[in-house]
Length: 105
Image (cartoon, rainbow, N blue to C red; front, side, top):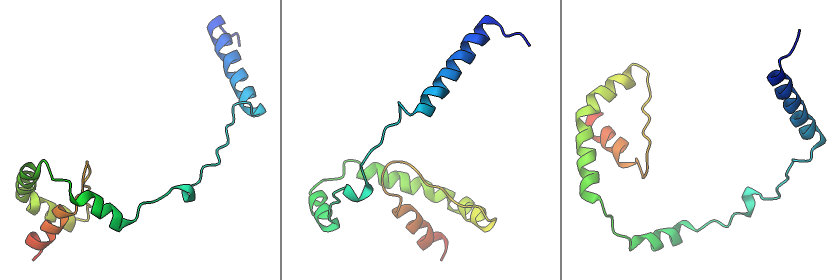
């Protein structure tokens, strides 16, 4: 099987890359560990964030209110064996609590 010039160059590059990896010249070792992280105490965190005012309280309440129309659809999906995935920035705690307290009673 004849290789074209471009294929030969690509093969040579790939072979050289693999050989360099095998030699270990590009292997970096880190000594950082998860246990080295200095964690903040939960009480200190709550005290520090207590003075921060919520900037979008009205918008968040409006958004949570708009989801109430979807509760019946979500319950159907849960009954059919599906799960709900809520993602995005910020806490999602209020939404499932509201679903449970209003739609599941």
